[in-house]
Length: 354
Image (cartoon, rainbow, N blue to C red):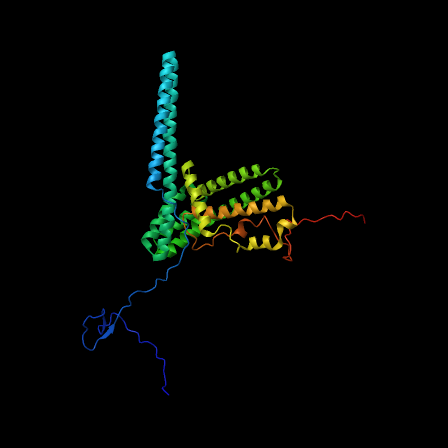
């Protein structure tokens, strides 16, 4: 029976002159210790989940909207020119008044177009920052991390509440910190107060939707209120994290949020709060309208969580991402025994006399 002994692998220093780092098939000096490098080493990188990038419009779509926009602009320009000519034909002062209104209209259109372009560029900047931060976390790149931190400090100058955080973070830029650690430090300083405010906004929106849906007499009113609340919530979250979305920016941002919900599976059945609702049969215990209000509130909360991940300029690495139970805890609460929903429990009064 052969005695098998387990021996520890021998360690060599690469700066030792007796150790030769050789590729396969390369001649080596006699008596030297040959160390063959491995073909590929798995990267021990931290996986950071990123929201999906906004879908790119096809060329045919760009051509379609460009042609339609050009035709509408030419038609509108011809209509305005004909109106001004008719006003001049009636009286000179009417023509000059119409020309002045047309000039104001053109200037306003240029201003709105510039604002829309600025909003789209700011959203693109936030998406770029998030992708670069994830790359810095993956590769531990100090140069990329320092660039992301400086840009975030510049973008956050519009928030007076982050003055102390910016000052402390700027003092760490000259320190010897790895790239991944610098991204985490930036997230703790700049994103922590913003995340708390974003969680509060989503929670308040979910509560409003739940209450209005429960007391509203018509489904059309519920639909309009939920849609307006969702759009307003996404806009406030974008403004909170440094975005300035206009109309086109909101359309793109809403599409990105819906795409993120589709990728993540929407309101997952594994969420503890959803299990609580299903497990206790809330819709059966409470009135139908109240149960519908709670479900709509949960949907609004889930949409708000997706909007946070889409509008946040940094991925969640050092700080935990807010969960559904954090933003929708006011919709359903449990009693100390943990058996029944305490805040929403309905008690029936005994109609029989004592």
